[in-house]
Image (tube, rainbow, N blue to C red; front, side, top):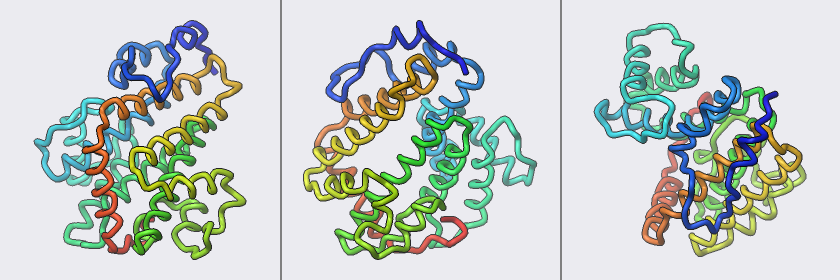
Amino acid sequence: MSTYYCLVAGLPDLTLEDGKLSYTVTNFKTEIYPELSEEDRKLMDLFYLQFDNANLLKLLKDKDAAIDSRGNFSADELNAIITSVKDGDAWDKTYPSYLFDFISAYLQSSGDETFLPENMLAAYYYDYAMNCDNQFVSSWFEFNLNVNNLLSALTARKYKIEVAPNIVGNTEVSEAIRTSNARDFGISGTLEYFEQLLRISETDELVDRERKIDLLKWNWMEDAVFFNYFTVERIFVFLLRLEMIERWISLDKEKGSELFRKMIDSLKNEVQIPAEFR
């Protein structure tokens, strides 16, 4: 395992209240990423894949769509993957396998009104990331999946919306949330943060709710890397926090309200996800 004494020691301290940043998610890729070992750069790539996922969904609808430059791959590369799948070519191991699997399923789903591409791609992504060799990074993605699924389920219950179609992934916790009618989905004994999430879900003011979610994630990271002083895990947390602060710097109440409306509209979509895609 590589250690990064000078690199970690030189990173600025971050708080959720920061109003400006000396690093961004974008220049992390150019200034810090090159200093990492090849193995550790692959871990950072898992983080940046979230932007590739969003870009891929755009390009499947419009090959000329503008994309987020923070992803690992250019529009030309993603379009080439799409073309490769359409042509029936074998998986190019330069790229994550789940992108090929998703594109194949997406193309086969044409005209299927029950198909939810965002949910399916997220399921593939989380499964891919949770299977990485780094225990902390794998645990982070599992934790994030659980938090997102629980908040979706609790919100769906609050608005009397079907829970199952809004749950992502095929883990035991995902399946419990998807199928259980119990108050705690039968998992409060497994997830120590369930009661905290339940209280957060009852917060009506959106900005306050989002900040509590991020604080929960922030504290989880701190506990998880408490004994990792100069390792890649500490650098991964720094990157996660950079993104979190960037989002808060750019977020205003109008955008927050729009985000909430979109979330509720999405939850009201009661189409069923085919079982093989959950």
